[in-house]
Length: 285
Image 1 (cartoon, rainbow, N blue to C red):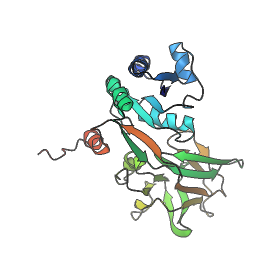
Image 2 (cartoon, one colour):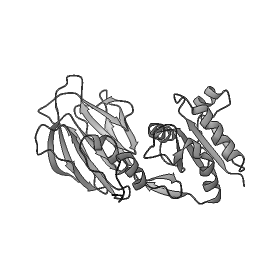
Image 3 (spheres, one colour):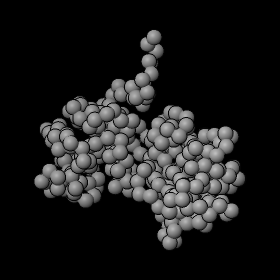
Image 4 (cartoon, rainbow, N blue to C red):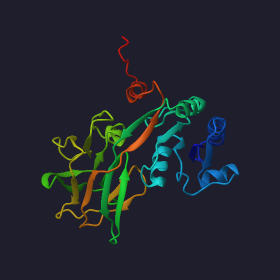
């Protein structure tokens, strides 16, 4: 039976067209049907499909970690495994560099690839104007100060119990995957990808006692603007569209019911990427 791969392309990457041709050739020569998203198809002058993931056995994201996140959000979740092909610098989420696409296609066709599950967050909130939203986050949800530039005041509850009132530039709730992204830049800990936790990291807290906290991902986190401090609070998931939180909204964060399946090449691991990205020696003295 013919296998089908859907491709999502970052058209802003200079080598995107060349990388897509490598993907099409590598998978097509092994009997795969290859489809591309509508915008990517327009760039390449070929027919694309809006729902590029429908009926596929695999989705390939061509770009980098940001493109990988965009692919996931376009899909609205995680119905099929995703493999990232990186153009440029090494990414935490991508499976291989663009020159390794043939190896990726061979490994997937032979069933020699690795499927790694990455937990996601489900985030529910109400923005100003009353519209209710639900999002999935692979990296993090961020609540941050708005246009006034003043510190925000957020009341945080974990499983219904008051944890803290944060006075800070903002607060990040991150997955283990997101622990290497904005949370790390804000001083949060690095967390292994299979840790089954969430990381709550304040951004530039007003007091020295404001520390990152690691909690189990079976918990439910509730974040709400403090009643005495009506400063506007902005909200974003995985660095995407920014919304304004309604003053009486409660932002509810818990583990999404469906984890994402990320394709890894044999011999490649999160810890190998960590060593390369952070310049760790890996035992070599």
